[in-house]
Length: 324
Image 1 (spheres, rainbow, N blue to C red):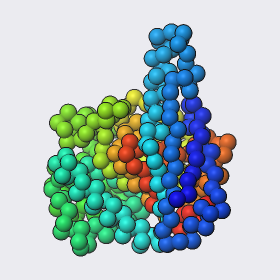
Image 2 (cartoon, one colour; image 1 turned 90 degrees about the vertical axis):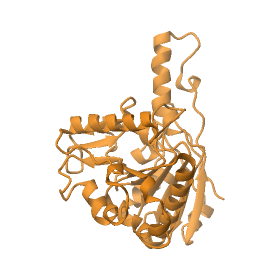
Image 3 (tube, rainbow, N blue to C red; image 1 turned 180 degrees about the horizontal axis):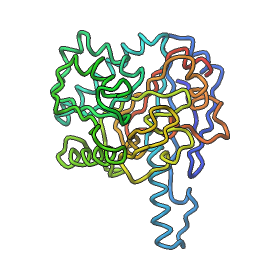
């Protein structure tokens, strides 16, 4: 198995990836698998010595934890390249169903985070046999990694997209689907959603990460924009450095509509599993920057700052992987 090596700067997790010609050749196969390991982080790596003041130590620990440790918590990332989006949908359905079975048996529930865009359509195979009838939908709890602050019946609503194409076709209890309160402002909706997560952590529906103290959602199903953004965390935006809030709001999204709420990186990176689904050639530059040599000496894209406590897997079609 070919590997990608990561070398990260103390604060910004700068990625320096190299891909050999043998790795490039894998992209012509129906499925290729790559893995890479992330280096350990320590206070020493962040320039903190034994003689530093308690306040500086506390600040540095927080910085180390929120920026470095959280984003590099995973032991392994995987990349799979498929011939077509149809192949991705088949594989993603099995991946999701297997994790549903695992967590329903282990915890009695399955906490799933959705995003918007084309990701929802890629879940369509879950609506077909054998999954539709074999999954225990009653134990699913569904959340959104981000949401546009619009009415639930608005065309821009991630909830509406997921409801129309997926949620309305499976028997998940309505009380287990956690949409935002669209009657609130962006800030109010973010605070309300964070309070909801905290209640569910307290009740045991959502697990709590022993490593971070943030909610440990079982599976986050994410997409990526052509600029490398995930959730509503955009390149160069200050929210990428948010380290204490679980959910925050954005009023100046570079992609309309401007008002949104979003999970922060500490919550994303505390997940047990993440599937990042990326299709089409307009994402190839961002994929090359994240996984190939295109990101050398550049500030990392949001997709590069994402990780998981268990497994982080890229699902790429050949078009998205075409520049690797």
